[in-house]
Structure formats: structure tokens, C-alpha cells
Amino acid sequence: MPLILDHVCQIYNADTETPVKALDDVNLVIPEGQFIGVIGHTGSGKSTLIQHMNGLILPTSGSVYFNGRDITDKDFDKKELRKHVGLVFQYPEHQLFETDVFEDVCFGPKNMGMSKKETELAAFEALRKVSFPEDLYYASVFELSGGQKRRAAIAGVLAMKPDFLILDEPTAGLDPVGRCEILDMVSELHRSAGITIILVSHSMEDVAMYVERVIVMDKGRVAYDDVPREVFSHSEELEQMGLAIPEPAKITRELLKRGFDVDPGVLTSSEAADSIYKALTKNR
Amino acid sequence: MSMDIVKTDNLVFEYIRRDDEGNPVDVTTALDHVNIDVKQGEFVGILGHNGSGKSTFAKHLNAILYPTDGTVIVNGMNTTDDDKLWDVRSSAGMVFQNPDNQIIGQVVEEDVGFGPENLGVPTKEIWSRVEESLRAVGMLEYRLKSPSRLSGGQKQRVSIAGVLAMHPKCIILDEPTAMLDPSGRKEVVRAIRGLNDVEKMTVILITHYMDEVVHADRIFVMDKGKVVMQGTPKEIFSDVPALKALRLDVPGPTRIAWELKQKGIPLPDGILTCEELVREIEKCR
Image 1 (cartoon, helix red, strand yellow):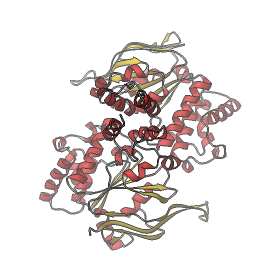
Image 2 (cartoon, rainbow over the protein chains, first blue to last red):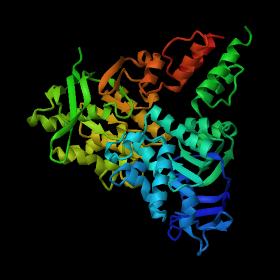
Image 3 (cartoon, each protein chain N blue to C red):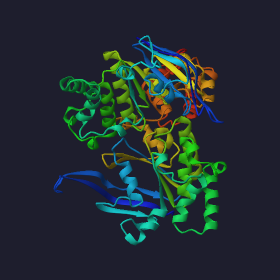
Image 4 (cartoon, chains in turn red, green):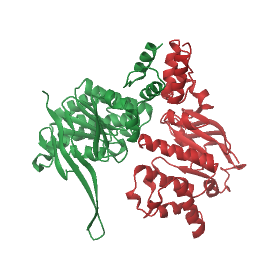
């Protein structure tokens, strides 16, 4: 059951003299099982977009379809939608509030009406999926590191067993290894649990390395929607949107201009090093 | 010889956890004999993963925290000297991670003027300080705007101007770009470099974005409350495995150069920027 956005517009302050078009005719099909990156400059509409995906905001015009039903219908059960589409906000650890980690993770499923036993099983499973250290299941959330808090918060959404998991800047504020750990964990959720992942990020490197499809938002519109390599080939346009292409590609592009036979579409440091190495050793 | 603006001598800081009755149960050493000195006009970067002690260190520099042992001297004053508290704080200006937590004014210029006003600076001088500070971070044209209308990068530059207006001897920035997008990061880093280059302001930049400190004069790397590496950016970023072991990274171009070196391409150590890497690769042709 794909998630479909059909001609979605969102206009803030519509009845004032300064209306803001936060989303402008957005059309997207999100099939199950994909790992998608959403990138865009601050104010490009990324956050507004994802809030439409689980019905937190309803479109000013256009429709959002889930499981073949229009979520804007009056009799549509939004609670049902939110069971399937989990949203992890930026800095989700600010929303931890229970006395210990396990209680906090239980909150979502309990609220959805799962029995005590189901709730606890779901919480254990979610904490295991995010590789949360077992000796800290009953620790106070104040005793956790930044990365651990974030895992706990993500587990709280996972415990509701969503089919779609949307993460808004899940690596913000973490150190380099913490960033990798969270992204590896998300990638593993996609691979082993088959959860559809929508990763909102402004780190091009992160997106390039992990996702299979990139949606670029600019001024409320979908500017690009393609595989990473294809999207990042539009380096000048991306720069105009305030986005930077991944640094490895910047370097191979510069070398290409200087007559090296390198691949301008590399996405990671290793790919860049491989490509440069080949170019340097080809004629030896 | 130029003078030390900041000098810590075997700085130790311990957090004591207590149970419900107030009995100590556990001691965490957040800073473990830290010796860091910063000279006037220097740009010093402090790197370290989350929880390495960077922020705890920063909080000692303007007497938000006091040492358990050892001393912190800021602009010649011991931070534990109660009589000097306000002098210490006006010597070492702090900028924090979240711009929304440090802007209070309804209008940009009012926000920037808040600090000097609190220090009792005469009104006329407040206005000239506001103007020079906003100019230094490239925000003068926004002086009459509401901070709520600014982007994250602009808000952070206003926060920096607010600190500058207090005429500190040095400015300490604790992960000022962690919450910003790439263009916001770029504009804040540019503003910070400008302060150091043009205004000769002493800068201590705490970050875990490696590329933000490639132009620093010196870098200190912290781990488990200790300074584990120190040197120029070239020296620090030459040791890729050591940084990886410390949960850190190296700038992108440095990583590519290092991988090429592993494959046998004769590149020098410590390449830091794209331009440098391209230049060195051309030499290998």
C-alpha cells in the first residue's frame, strides 16, 4: 500500500496579504520498501512535506492517499494512518519524558490500545532493533548519551510497528561516529525489517551513501526525484538551491576539468579514491 | 611574546552523583588534568566526540563551572575569584549551539545591545558597539528586523554580534553550527574566520565538523576528559587511524588523499582542502 501525494499544495497565511506557498503542486508516489532521502535548504518545504505524510497537516488543496483512501476524507481514521506511518521529529530526545527508557518506549503502543503484554513485547523488539544497550533498558533517560537518547526516541516510534518510518534529521548534533551508527542502524531497519524509510537530511554525504532515491525540495516544489547519482549530476542547479553536492564528487569534477579520466558521479570518498587511482595508474 | 588569554593548569572537574539521601554514589571525571593555553589573536579548534568533555571545558572558561582541582586563568584572572566574576565573563564571551535559546530581543539591534547595556555601558556607546558588532558579522542590514524572521545561520551571527558587543578578549563557540544547514554553517564559519582574520579576535571553536577547523592555528583533541592530541591542523589530520579511534573523522579531501596514499599514490600527509588535493594529484600525473 503505497503513500501517494497528488497535487498537494499547502498555503500558510492564505487569508493575509503575505501568503506563503509551503508546498506547491507536489506529486509523489512512495511505494513500500524504498529507502528515500529528502533533501532541501531550510525553508524548502521538507518538514511541511513529511508532516503531510502522516496527516499532521492536511493539504490546502490536493490529496494524500494511503492504502487507497484519501486521508483528507472526514471519516478517515488518522490514528490508523499514524500506526502505519511513524514520524521521528528532529531532536526526538527532547520528547522523552517517562521515568525510564523502557516506560518511554512503551508509551506509543500502550496509547494505541495494545495489551500490556503486546506493548512490552513491542518495546523489547524496538529497543533490540535500534541496538540499544540492554543494561540501560531501565535507566533514567537523563543518564544516556546523546546517541543513546536518540536511539531510545526512535525505538519509541518503532514500537508502534510502522510500515513507513520518517526521520527528520536523525543525525543532527551527533559526532561523526554517532552519525554513522544511527544511519547504519536505519539502513539495517530497512534491509532486515523491510520498513520503508524516508530520511530527511541536509547532509548530502549521508544521503548519497545510503539511499536509493533522492527527492530534492526547493521552494515548496519537487525539484528532482531520482537515483542519487542522477540527482547529484545537477551540481550547479543544486548549488543554486543552497545545496552542495557531496565533496568527493566536487573533487572528481574538478579533476575531470583538468583532463583526468575520472568519474564525476562518485558518491563516497572510497569511490573517489578508486576512480582517481584508476585514472592515475591507467597509463603506467 | 604574546600573552595567554586562556590558560588552564591541570584542570580537573568531577561530577558527583548522589542518591536520594544525598550520599555520593558515583564520581565521573569529566575533565582530567587538562592543560590548554590560548594566546591573544589565536584561532583554536577543540575537537572531540559527544561526551568527551569539550563543553564542560568551555563552561569553565567563563565561570559557569568551577574546577574541582587545578586552575583556570582567563585574561590574567582566576575564575574562582568571586570579585572578578563579571570581569571574567565579559572577557570570555560564549556562543552556544541553539540560536533560539540565546536571542531575547524583539529587534536585532536591541538583542545585540542587551549585553553592553547590562554591563552598564553608556547609551551612546551601546549604539556604536551594536553597529560595529553587526557589521563584523555581516548583519548590519538586518538591525531593525525581528530575530524570529531570520534563518538559523543569521540568528547565530546575531548571537555572535551580541557577544562581540560586550568587547570580550576572546570568544568561545560551543558547536555553533550543529543545528544549521550547510549554507547556514558556511555563513557562520565565514563570520567566525572574519572575526579572527580581520578583527584579530581570539577564537575558541568547539565542533565536531572537521572541515570547520582546517584554518585554525592549533587544534586540541579531547577524549574522556583528557587532551589526547594537539597540534596544527596538518599535524592532527595526518593521523587518520588515530582520529577514527577517537570517534572522529577527517575532512573529506584528507580522507580521499589518505585512501589514495594507502593504494600507493605518493601524496603528502595532511592535505586539508579540495584545492590542495587537486593540486597534489596534478603533480602525480
